[in-house]
Image (cartoon, rainbow, N blue to C red; front, side, top):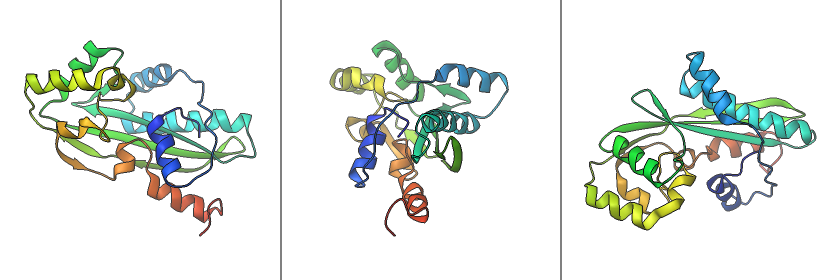
Length: 193
């Protein structure tokens, strides 16, 4: 897996896969900035990022099936990155409060340095209009963990309390559309059918 994401690693482990984690050493901000300058959609940018990660690791490990994934949060045509600090996490959550945002989630599988499969999903999440007091309690409890995920929330924890409505498959929301990936791996005889 060409990602250091704990959530993605956990999904694959829970599904019983045996794999190595080799995070791709790419500067995501350069790719995102270029995509924005080229007026590409966030979905397209997520696809480019997932492919770039998978290709980089696959080129170094040509006989391995390499999974790359990326996710971009979009609200009101604004692309959100992981919060750099708690102040930014608060700002992100205040902006997302009471709104629906999309998680443009892409996955790419490479072999011998070339893409052999890609998939994209767009879960939609609606945050409730929580109070400032709730927000402060949430920030106090979650602390720096909020800076490890885009949107400053973890649905597998207290973050679920931020939402009124969630549309999309759970693993795609966590950054790795697992059901289509597992089917692809079975189709390729990587996993037993």
